[in-house]
Length: 120
Image (cartoon, rainbow, N blue to C red; front, side, top):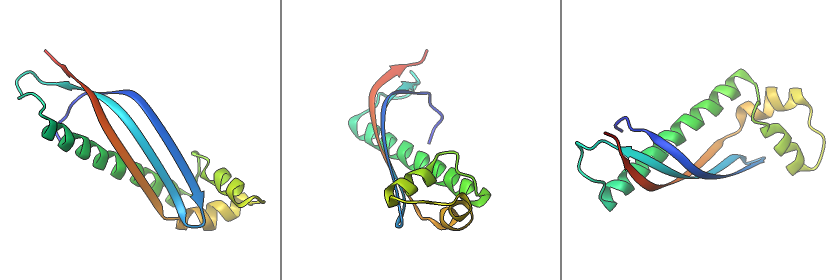
């Protein structure tokens, strides 16, 4: 994926944490700056770019969560969501040492490029 400048126009996110794992759903609307020496974005090229951006972000987010699991830290608050979903008590040691590091992570990202601007 070529280096481009992206501007986040809007976003929506949902997360669910249960015994089955961590599930994150992100929906992003972006503006992308286009190099004037390149051909204009066709609808097919735009879809390809949206897919490439989604794949890259998915890998990055999954990688970051994996690092948190290895380090046994939870700054995102997944443990609190898990405790609330279970409706009970959850000891921090149990979450950080046993449950969180072993949880599978599923990330779904939907990208929609709204605008394509020109860089001069």
